[in-house]
Amino acid sequence: MNTQVPLDGLRVGHYRRVLFCTDFTPQADAAFDYAVDAALRNTGSTLYLLHVVQEPDAQFWRNYMPADVDPGDLLCKKAEERLRDVYRDKVPGQVKLTVKAISGDPVQAILWFAEEEKIDLLVMGRARKGMFAKWITGNVMGRVASRANCPLLVIPVGDEAPAAPEKE
Image 1 (tube, rainbow, N blue to C red):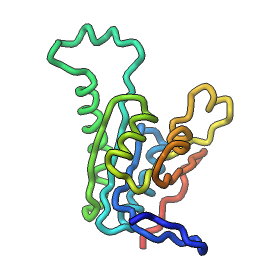
Image 2 (cartoon, helix red, strand yellow; image 1 turned 135 degrees about the horizontal axis):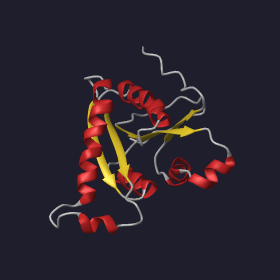
Image 3 (cartoon, rainbow, N blue to C red; image 1 turned 45 degrees about the vertical axis):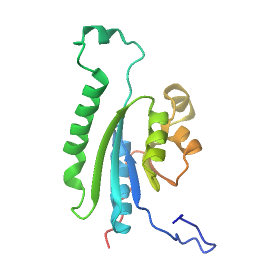
């Protein structure tokens, strides 16, 4: 069932797969409660926690790894452990949880994962930065937003995190 927005602005439909993307920053953490809330409000939903491990451009360090060790796999396993350590206890028991870390370009990896898992709602945090900072550091959220094929909930974060959704 596709999610539709009728003229009165009320959402019709059901988010079965909610994706929360994190880079473990305060901006991402501020969006986490919104992702959990979306999963709770849509009974039977699965909450996906995703971290993208971005490998550095210089790959010379791979020469120092044993041949049977894939550094990307090792980094992803460590990231999945961190996802569980940071977020698992904050997810209510009635919410199905899937934890995943993948390596690659963050924008491409998030879009690929969302398509692959047929995500219904993508939740991300956004820092309130000036134009110069955005130009220097890039903007993963903005590039994901311009190419996502599913609804995207963006949580802006300034000096203080936004208030968490109220529990019913």
